[in-house]
Image (tube, rainbow, N blue to C red):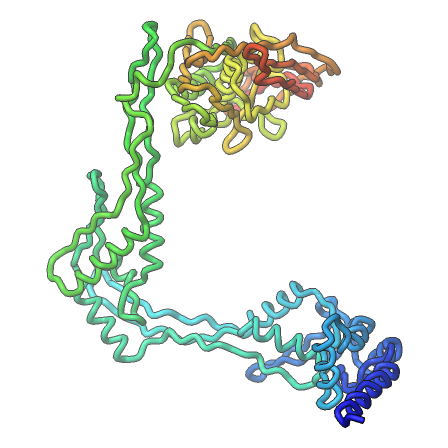
Length: 573
């Protein structure tokens, strides 16, 4: 018989015997936490681990005479004995025969140490580590360069070193301790923070600072008369004493903040429809401007470096990107604005002066707006910030169930009127939110359900120009007649919009009248600021067709809560 065949046969028989012997048992040499589980069944291994492993073995942390103890239970943790036994018996038993043989041989001849399975709340562990770190950490004191405006002298403090616990490393050490069952104390790993200047670095920084005194760095913007002049302490604050250079990140943050006030969007030309079928410009387009922060920061860094060697002042122009408007005056005759597509109307009889002022201001702010084909119109975006800072006056608004003075009361009349014009123009409406209750102004010569509320930043009123040409939004305001109209002009593509009669159901009577004290009104004065309104559910259908094609078909629903009449009662002496 062939010797090689005999040897192969012997190994084959031995392998079969080995497999039979350890069927359902852990292979020899598999160890968990120092416990050799070779030959054990999964159940016996689990019982052995439960008997020998201490589930709440304390981990002791040390740092410079201080100590902290952490238990596995402190982080809602425990040993998964069944899972650990399952991991042990899985050694050498996967779908790869070659890997299995290697794992079995490795365990048999050299031992295979695996960690017990533990479950715990990692976020809780990190929170505990963070708490311990807070007792250890000492922040470094950065070097400081100071300028005394009185004596005109510069001083440089060297700073102080600090240290910080390495939380990630400590986390791994604690977890490994729980898995191995080791009782050794853990020395908390700490990083030293070394910003302190040497004597030579401090002297070099002082000489640099002295060389910059009374030198002026002027920042300009191309095409703008505005400029910023920086001198002495403003420049010294950007010096990086450790590197001998400049604090690029600090300078970049300064440029970023500056850019917020300088950046502007391009302003398209606004046009006014005239009876001849053409448009005329009444607000010219303006180029937009974007400050390029990275490029501008690098320019400032170059200027500062130059200042250290030059005796003269330095002027730096920020890097800007000029963005031209999409619609310029030259394009006025190519926009396809030919006819009226839809008109919305509303009345505001009984409004106080400030409400009328806000209504007029918001209506005029959208008048002349051009909307490109395919563009979405956002009323909040066009009107912008509604506050005293932008010129709006306080008028009565409803907030948290009370009638109070708030900036911009009345702006929602503009959104409601625009909603009506968009319905008639048959343009797809993307966002519309009804008021929470029926407002009398919106039901003057109109049924309920034709209102739309807005508030910065939400809710908004949005629609899309899905016509093939530009459309123009134009407002008409008549203070004497208490009348507002908003027109949408463009080019008709043959679409026809229609609305059904308004359906009203579940009507609910208003609560009793409410009187609120108002310290701004004289004693004896009573002013009604809200009229009672019935609650109701309201709906109407809207359909837009072009020939046989249905472009839009939807139902607008409003759920109005009942509203009480509100009277303000003066308390001012």
